[in-house]
Each structure stands twice: as C-alpha cells, then as structure tokens.
Length: 415
Image 1 (cartoon, rainbow, N blue to C red):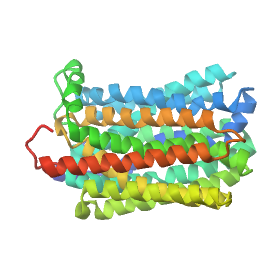
Image 2 (image 1 turned 90 degrees about the vertical axis):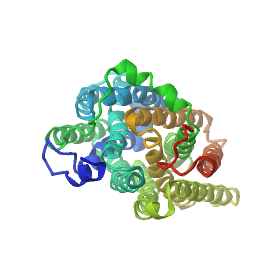
Image 3 (image 1 turned 45 degrees about the horizontal axis):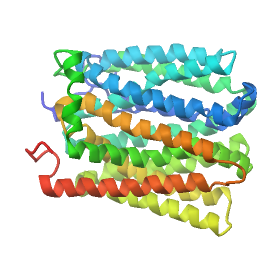
Image 4 (image 1 turned 90 degrees about the horizontal axis):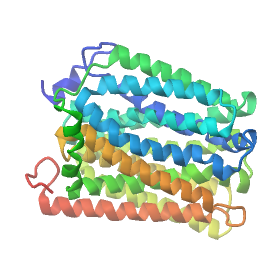
C-alpha cells in the first residue's frame, strides 16, 4: 500500500486502519493543553506552594527540558516497536502523573510528577511521524498544517478555561480537566489507531545508532534549527507572558486567558496558510515568509512599548503576528525534519523535537529569571525578537542548501 493510499484508507474508530485526522489532532492537542491550561494560575500556584514565581516557573522550563530528552528516546522506540504501543504506554504514564500533580502536598512532589507528565510529548513527536508514515513529503506539510490548525484551538481556549477554573475552583481543577481529556485520547488511540509503521527497525540499538546519519545532514539541521528558533520565541512568551500580564499589565487570570487567545488565533491562521499554500509555494519559502512575519510582530511590539503604548493590546496584539509566523514556519519545518530521511521518521521527529523543545526550555528559563518589575517587558521582547531573527537566518540557509543540492525528495546527495 502506498503512503497516499494509506492516508485514504483511514476508517473512523477502526483499529486496523491508520488514524483519522481528528484523532491525530487530539493526540497532538493533549500536550498543548497540558502546557497551556495552568499558565494563568501559575502565580497563584506559587502562593499556594509558598515559593517564588521564578521557582514555580520550573513547571514550564524544567518540564520542557525533560520533554526534550524524552523525545530522543521516544522516536527510536516508535521506529522499533511501532507508533501505537509507544503512544499507549506514554499516555498511561501521563495519566498517573497527572493524578500525582492534583494531590501533591508540596512543591517538590508537584515538580516530580510534573516532570513525569513529560511523557505526553509522545503525542507531539509521533503525530508528525504518523503523518510521514501516511503521506509523501510534499503532502506532509499541508497535513501537518491542518492538524496543527485544529490543535491550535486548545492553547487558545486552554488559558481562558484555566483562568476561570483557577479563580473559581482552585488550580487543581485545571489538572482535572487535563486528566479527563487525556483519558479520552487514550481511548481514542485504542479504538481508532492502527499501526502505521510498516518498516520497523530490527533493534532499538540499531535505530538509536542512526542518529549520526541525521546529524551529518546539513538539511536536517537547517529544518531543526528553524523549528527551534521559531518555537523558541513562543516558549519565551510562555515563560514570561504570565509575569508581564499580571505584574506589569495588571490583568486578572481570566483576562489574561482572553488575551492569550491572540497568539493562538494567529497560529491558527498561519496553520491555515500552511495547509492551503505549502504545496504551491514550497516548504522552504513558507518557512522563510513565516519567520519574517514573526520578526515584524516583535519589531511592532518593541516599537509600541518604546513609544509608551504599554497596553495589553500593544503586547498581545503584536505577538499575534508571531503566532501567524510560527503557524507558517513550524508545519513546514517539521515536515522537512521527518522527510530528510524517511526511514528514520520517528528518530528524526524525536531529535528535531529535542532541539526545538530543548532550546525552548532554555529560553523560557532565561526569560523567567530576567523579568522584574524594574526591567519591564523588554527582556522578553528582545529574546523573542532575537529568536525570530535567527529563524530567518536558518530558513535562508535551508533555501541555500536546496539551491545547491536540489529540492527535498529529489536530491540523491547525502546532504
């Protein structure tokens, strides 16, 4: 069965066929919900656990670091044993860890279970690998774009729901929602997802040893770093925006949840553009255009703040352009990552994701420590701008490699 026919053969709630696109949306969404829903109550959690905000922010930055490491293992595991069993085991661990977060008596126990929640990264890693199992590279960017467009609804409504629940029922209620949604996704994987990895590797060691082949590829690093710098701006935003919104712009958690929807709306729009036009414009140029739009958004935000327009619309409205840019850059960069070496799609998704999330963890932690009432929002704005500029540079590098070695899928060079 060809990859295209495999994607056309998906039957809803049939365990013998590839997953329906809605199943892939929900598999990818659970990780986004777990990251976003409690952001608006993070300062309240710091008060509850009697700790500093910078330490409480480890629930984001350290969590991202753990997920970066896990991706290095999950990708090869899925290439060896299959996508379906690795997803089911990973989400089972996630559900148990979420229960632990809800009943944590202190910050140390909470952070331990929060790190175990990192197993949910399998959803993000393997949804991309599953797409590459099902379709060819020139179709993958469009399919990933549509999947992430559906997924972007979650981080849009997640902070709003979390803000309301946190104010009304306490921060634990946000994790209860994650637990229920996670259980639904586990059932859906069990009921709808057949195995898509039809060429499993002979051993886990052999698959893990394939990383040097990926690491020698200039094109792989171009795509991975483009994804890393583009998402780095977003993760810096995740790490610093709650402080800016509450301490500097004086927003209530529910209000902050409303404004968080701006970047998600932008991301959804960028995802739509990717799904609609990536086949026409091409992966590489879409990445570059997206990165340039993100740079424009950050220059707009910085200019408005320097001119004295320090208002929620100035901040979140400008950062909507970062959402649009990332929505164009990331689906195409991720499609490139898993298409450079198709027989290593899981490993490539894991390694590329580790670069992306690891860089994001670093930027999130740095931003969280730099922000103070005295510094204002400027450390966050400069970090996001710098990361977006680097994404433009790496996207341009991918275009240079393609010009020398040929377009993806048509070059015989091991570049």
